[in-house]
Image (cartoon, rainbow, N blue to C red; front, top):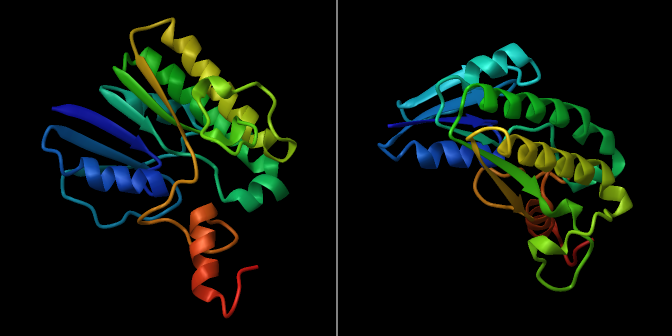
Length: 203
């Protein structure tokens, strides 16, 4: 059986992964939370509480793990990316730097990181991985540059050890357990909220 560590298990992506992967009898799911409370999950989910900004905690959590899924972040919706861009920078750089180093030290087989398409320029057509130019829209620069930095650190560690690194650049995610308030939600969540609350037309 493979031991999986899901960082950010109480977040949107992390919760969906925890509930889904815990149904697979081939996995032992270890779920990491920080400030949020545990939710009802299958009995085979092992809960851990820890601050991923602490290197000693990160080292302990990743020990003896086969797969680390990194869905933990100081994050919020698109509104905060524009109005308070700094909140996506420091903590996320620290958390992922410690996780990547610990996965290397503990010889974790596979590290999976959720990046984002926020580093791409605006486009009216589908964007390929190779379309990244390095020129990030000014209002998304904080979040975008941080994602790029983490991807580069992952690439660096991929050249040092045997850990496989997978980067997923998702865009406009939505689904069960998402937020639907206009302050913190993603684009689709906010749009659904506006549609449901609109009297005649959307603002």
